[in-house]
Image (cartoon, rainbow, N blue to C red; front, top):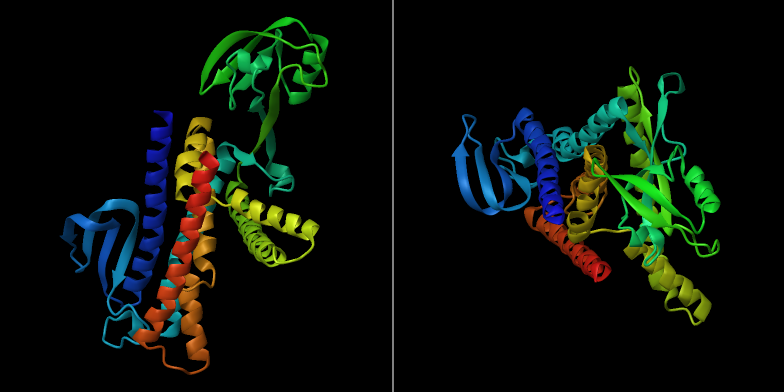
Length: 379
């Protein structure tokens, strides 16, 4: 049931983020004098449609995988009044990149709200204003479990938060480690929190220091809490994560390219390193199955704060990915238009469709490969 709720929550959040993105395009188009023929939630077939006062058809569709906006004359060479192609280069730029801007703003707003109530600190150098920052340490949390070890035998699972251990409150992971050494071989009481409910269990610690006494990996999250500086922290955090996302994408493509090329090398050591590079690409990329089947359910179980944080990260990722100069994405469409304008070449409908089709095919191929990798990780 928790998996089902996590998947449904993920679908709803992804659809809302895509709708926000498409709404950015629609508003920019409407303000630029371009006719918005249809604004759709989900993808066809339709099960509901209504014509709005401004002439735009609003539709609800059966496939809940995002949304779309359909503009009149949605290609660069269109020249009728109200066509997307008939407006200036500046207005086309606004229309193409407004969706990116909206997703970026959504991320900044979510990070700002989180900064007020407690923004998860995931980077050592994460942005904060020292004079208006309170770092809050959360309960020690179980991050991994060894099979057939004391924690596992007692029913403790990943995500549980340790409240009391052998009769003591646990301020940090080191204190828990110290207690296990003091109490090794003994039976102790553990009180832990799971999804807001406290549980109590007895654990018999092992005697062997080398293999672990408790049998669990420990972690402790920190929260950045601000007051007046929350909006500043929110915007600055979005900018910091934007740069990190771009760096991550660069490293990803670098590992992919090096991995493929180096596989052709005669040196077995180099080929082994190339295999590791390719494996790191697979490990660091998640497709629809990974996001909906693993990431969202885990965030859902971790609580509303983690879910909001994940939503902000995905909204930011949508902004960055759509801004990339890849054909069929917003950034790619803008680059295609800009290059043809720079060289004073006419971007015909046929040329534009061919470029976008190639780009879309490449993207779909990548999605399929990542989906296969997601399935392989599950099994």
